[in-house]
Length: 330
Image (cartoon, rainbow, N blue to C red):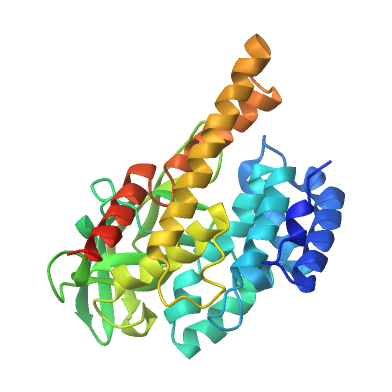
């Protein structure tokens, strides 16, 4: 029986408690039949479609930029408890369109977000590159003018969640307004754009849809840019601020703080490091059964271990926290 006593905390309102009950009932009735770990791609597609039909994806891709992080946390906690793929499918719809929700043009929002909310299209967030994982400022994929109000993308991305099954990607590329992080921009790229290729599907210890993408003379309209030129790093970080908070359940963003980068990093780091410590002890307590393939501790260990790496490794979170603290005394 899951402990729900936290719902009585003053952080939550009655609507959050109703959402928790609704999500619990839906997950218990639907997730076991939808999540098949022998068919990862199909499971994610089915879960997204069903979550959209049930109305849950409206929280991941709201009609305006006002994410309710508490609702996201409740839904992720509930879905993850029933199956890690359910949490993954839900969270990626939000992460994959967070840049659009926060900074996209009205036209892009009208065209793209309804399908995401309905579970009719699958979204992805394409940030990481072979030489730009923890250090986003090193992104090398280029976006250059191609004439006739078009831009050409050339380069690659790797470890992209939903890669291979997504209908569209938010892609971060170097546009050269300034050196480093200030020279990046964000773009909306449909999966069927010529020149965008799923070069390799990637397997991990906790299976999820992951891929390496290549962009070779991949042309998109300039109107597919999200926000202003050079705002890519800021947009990426604003998106991660929201979804890092859902890993560790930070209250600060919903309370209206103008910037929560440090707090989101703290929440993500503490939650994932503690989760790793707990599951490691659980495996040890269960002895040989703890490392038997398919056992509950072994399955959870594989799911949890990746948490300390994705959306910014623990070491990156420490750097973010330290920089923010040092900036206050400089």
